[in-house]
Length: 488
Image 1 (cartoon, rainbow, N blue to C red):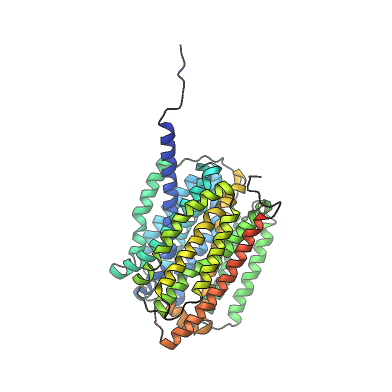
Image 2 (cartoon, one colour):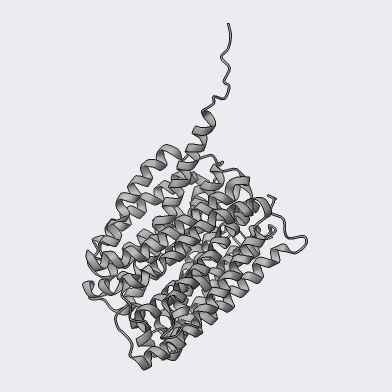
């Protein structure tokens, strides 16, 4: 009796590629909705403040609270992916995110909105921390850079949708719909994910680092609390206490990480060649770049008195071009290595930041749009290349931890970029005026607008210095003995 041979059929490869494409689509959608909720709230802040009758300090925590919880949980939920399955945790992230979105849409005061944004951030952390590992499990190493490039399209698309939809929804519907729009997208993504994503990574039983998570969270919260208070108050002993306490807790966190068996930050990964400069480059790039969107909105809506819709439409070309650059940069990184496209991308962003620092009250608006295109090209070169560099050198059993670690370092930069930009920009105008302009609760006179523009010039120059530092860190990966991207 003859045994049936299982030979590959002509359509098998096409079907496999189709499943890979659907899997990538699910990951991109996850990154997209997480990015949408990073930016969509910004243009809704004035309406949220008026609707819920809350103060300016509460408004800013609607943004920072979401980012902080993602920063705090990234490595831990990445570890959960290694323990219980990256796909399972990724799908759970969609469920939690949708639940948080519904709760945010139904919130009744400032406390409820901030708490529900934190819940939404838990879902965002599960999605973002496991997305890189899902790609690494789904695609072979020689095709991951291209996949990360499409991931960059998801982020760029989500960010621009957040800005444009935020302005349109607040203008024509209600601020609550900035959260309702996540529900059908999230539910659809879960349905597709359950059909096409498959857990391929080995399960690794680990424990969570509760003490490390507590000290890191409290330390970052202390520093952020101090910086947020400085946006509207003068430095005093209370603010000094938050700063000292935050630094002390971060020092305790570092000591704990060197002592526990299962640390939140796996310090052994820093011994992998190219890992440290890649992670630090991601941190300083985010610290320099995340504030750009907010600074430009402050300039366009405050100094130039544009409407939210008009201001956001000026930025659309940048996101479109940046999204097209991402896949090409990823393919280049696959073939030639990550150092060149990542470092060139950072250098291009430096040029864009210098251009922003030259903006005046009568600068042509096409200059803003052109500089944003330039900056988006730089981001499109940097992100997929740097992500591919980190995941290629990460040990196969630590992909989830490495992905979460990368997000943690980038998110720390994002969280502090927001507060740092406001502080520096307020150096030439009163802190109350700068903060009010940021949340859209006031406009500037001609004299104040000129001073305010000078302030954001200082903020852009500060971002330029940070971006140069990121470029230097990225370039160090090309030194002899450190330029390997092979798995250890």
